[in-house]
Image 1: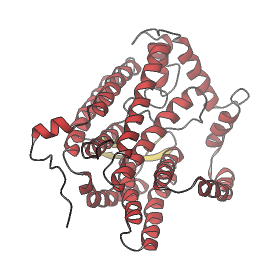
Image 2: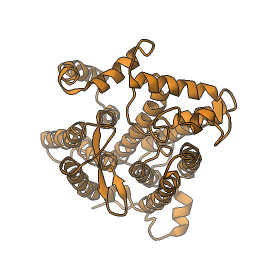
Image 3: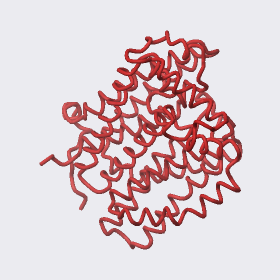
Length: 376
């Protein structure tokens, strides 16, 4: 017989009392600052007002979806997760058939009303849902172990292969990091990850010599030795570091950053949006934004630890890994400690698909948090 948990559908009072306001406040703070920073990045762009308006609309729609998702028991997402996984996989296949290309990657679809949409964003959530289901079954002894392992491998590989084929290696790496985080919390020992890394050397060598183009090889070489690299990636990173440093301690103020407003750093509304934070909000603002992200990640870890079941723990772990990787990679490449990729900064970077995905993730975190076991 299925266990009965607190039904938050029936009582608005219980819903308001149980919602995780720490997560909610942190996300709203990040989103608000993100919109202000994005407005500055787009201030002198053709069509900037239209792009900003659409981002704000998606933020509000995402917030509504997050609150709605929180009202439902996250275990109900198991079946929904498989349905959405099939849909996201179909959309990834559709990208292959009728892609919209940008910055050398065919990762988008052009949809009516919505406009440009990136299926790999929503695929991150469905990926986490499905992987968590199979690992929860393994932990709880449901079904045949070998069957669950085979399904786990197959369901995990499909979106990664599709996305790497676009090619969008940065996003593919997000999926890899997500599953590493989930497997680690599941209980896989570190030595197995080491063996997997050693075993992947021939694959990485094949990618380097036969798959990566000169631009992608240049990004990695730039990361390894920025001082002597002579490439577009080196140009971006040097301009990025200069712009961030120019903000000094207190920043130049929103909409008044000389380098930001002149568009010195390419793609500063998305990939390099942290340069706007650095120049216009300065060291103080940058530390504040980073602190908000770190607090959000710590709260997510808390929610995962006190989740009432294995599925909830793995679900939030995957989302924490996703947000954490985006946060570290995006800011890291802006200051030259990570290679340049097209990974957006959650709640900041321009991208309707990413904004919607981030708020769906927040809704799932809230759902798990509202039904957690009591802290001892």
